[in-house]
Length: 311
Image: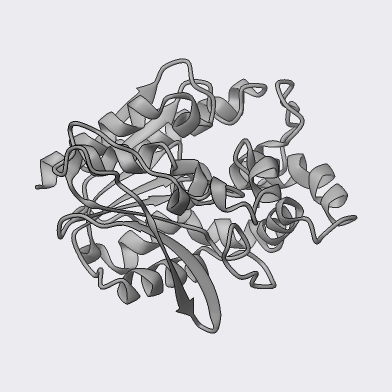
């Protein structure tokens, strides 16, 4: 592996770049509210005149599913035979999409699903390192139990980009398309970049180990364990040409305090988009890494366009 370059510490927030890719903004607050039913999509509703059932509230229903002995919380707004799955950034869970999900249902008529990954929201904790492959198994198990095996438009933010890439590689026939929202992409995790991320996050990991039971600390620790090896493997993952994708990249990136890393992040998104003619690169102007929160309209537009193109 290449010699670790000296990395400029981001100045705009306390978390390191790896922590940003692991814990999306708001994760500390969200995880602290895990037991509050009012924060879950299942407890909220939305009405839109654009909905196929105009005037009727689009309410998500909680479904607990089993995956290898642990339970996961899935929230389902039932619609047509097509499905849109919203996968949250690291440290976030289903509430990240509480405003976007009902609007997507209203605009498309599709079934819209959000869920809590293991250890977050109402889902069970699974000890040990975080593995994208395990997260893929959890997602597929949940969708299968909900009767969904095909025609999925996958929307993935940040760390969920790793889940999307492995899922697309292993089961491309499940996906009709994807929108990758400032997502982790294989092209970014080079032999030069991985050690920069590991070095930059070490202070946060050390601090988290002093209180490992806090959900946000547990998430950071589990992702840091084996990070280098896991992302060396992730770097080799290839997205199938058969699955169209929109790559939505933030203007400021997760690395506003490090121009070199910000450039690499943007270059990775551009490289991914250029590898097949059915991929589109979109820049969310003026946004930080938290695109779903700062510019939900941009996310909605991208998802609606992808869905319409495939249906």
